[in-house]
Image (tube, rainbow, N blue to C red; front, side, top):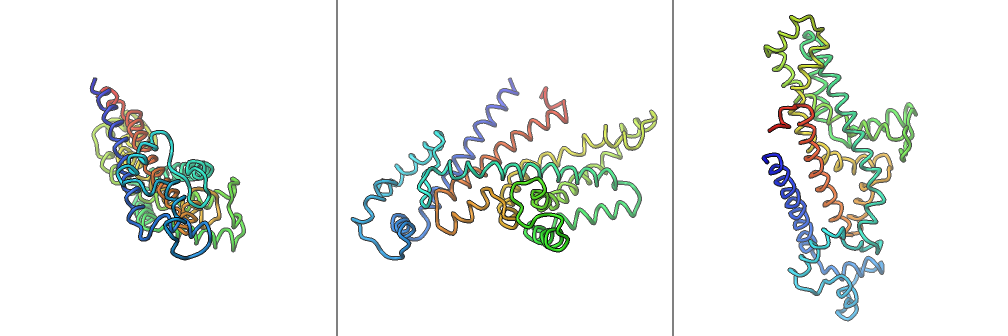
Length: 313
């Protein structure tokens, strides 16, 4: 029963988070200076002028701008549960179509970056923690340095060195496997440093536990002890952060996609901001919020897999 209750609480919390994000984006649209219908008319005509009430009437009727705010809000939130994120001002088609066509490349990029970040973090942790002063210092320095690097700086350096100077990778990445390497590393390297720092601290503490000494006295190799016993306990804090990290990677993908000219919601977001396409901007915000929610649910599942004691809790 406790497990079912926990699942129900998670489901309700997820809905609340999505509705809260929707509320923030809706009222943020209202807070933007200027009349929405007038702004939209200027976008459609390419002019910058003040339009009359009669000229704006068709737009106000089509988008419901004349309705009371509470009615607009309820229509907006209700539409979310039917998969309706509104209509793009500039492309004049549903926001779900605008975002949906570019979502897969972004999710592929962020998913690959998360896997690479974990591989780097775990590899460096296994190879450097308690391996002597030099290796330990090297691993600690690497993690502290990479964790502090901004995505745009990493992306520009990788682009200049490996694409422009060495010409190993294409400058414009696209969606090819070779063109995906640098964008993935742009997102993965800073995250790997951050996950490595968290895992290293826990790893060092677990190495001092009695069950580790017991495993060694039974003749298990050092690598076997680290992989089979220590690592399973040490990665739990980093798994907790992975839910946040996945959402952060989606945000970072905006930078990587623009640096390397990749398709994705990053390009859509930049275009929408520049053209003041508020429904599209709001839709992307909600998609990122939904990814946060899903990522945290996946974290709970990962916890149960790594630590079986939680399954019976």
